[in-house]
Image (cartoon, rainbow over the protein chains, first blue to last red):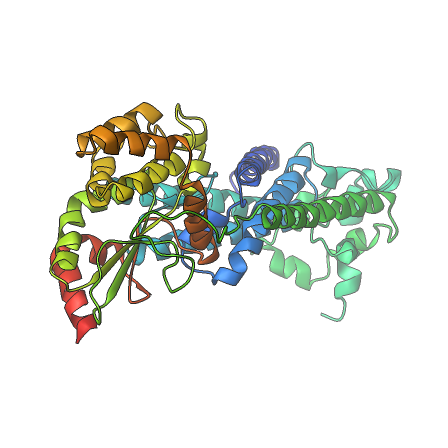
Length: 170
Length: 290
């Protein structure tokens, strides 16, 4: 990555930030408009005990929308990127786990959720895992280089802080 | 590391995005390690003022977002608690259908095999995989029950009426309507035939569902004719078994069943393969018997 200039890294980070923001806002938003939130999808994973699913059904989409909002405005980008990478990793583990256990479920990633047909199972799980791996990669990049354009993180704290002083760095 | 607070006061806000105006310094790149060790970073970063108006704005927005997240989650949980399906204990139930007591409340009892294992299967008539199960092993499952090796109980659910595909499809509430029609067909003594026929005539595209007329046609197709067909149509038109369907759905929700089909042999959930494979299921049933 050292071959990339600072400017192009900043732009790549900006694109990744906005793509991840769109992913979270869409994924969380769709679930919030379903009865029970993500409840059906979470039950289908057969991972959490019954007493958790009502709460998780609403907490998960709310957290997704919150992460999307932070990334959209570029606030605490690094923290939001790390949280995104962790959440995507959790989804990868969850999808792999149901696949290994032999169930046919819709990941419920963007609403919907529940069981799917047996045919096309391999393709479906593979594509879901590849997509989440891609998002994880983007989140890791953003956690590593959180400096982006159009970010609230960059609002100067005051006039003097807004002006870098190269002499002091040296 | 005792210097840490001095080295990165920008992290005093706890947010780990120091040096936003000098992003290169924020990179945890490997080559930074010796730069750090010779203390080269101390002066510039330490020069950022400790109290910053921009930080207050950021913390304010963060607090707003966090509050919204908690608020949305709590609101959703409360609203779904308020709208949770409730049981109507006075619901009319078709003949051979269980009441709200016992381990499989509101289920449809196909047969009775005392002392044998109980096989309970949750299904939604709009569920494609349930239709595939019917093709793969529907006959095998009924054969086990017909041979008296197992007590078979079908447990209807209608959760797919809430799916986006069904809600935007041409025939909303198809799962509820099909299950109500099934109850009327059970009264006519054609429950098993209607059950198999519905799955065999499930639309290829999930969420398409059935019209009221199609359901009435299916009834006559499975041999409900003459006055029995009139009774079926009156039963369906009056929504006689709507409360029963809702009760079974409430049981599905309260038991937190993970989708459909879901087969339980003496209360233990079977894998899809065990349920769909005739030989595997027969083997499990005989093991559960001994």
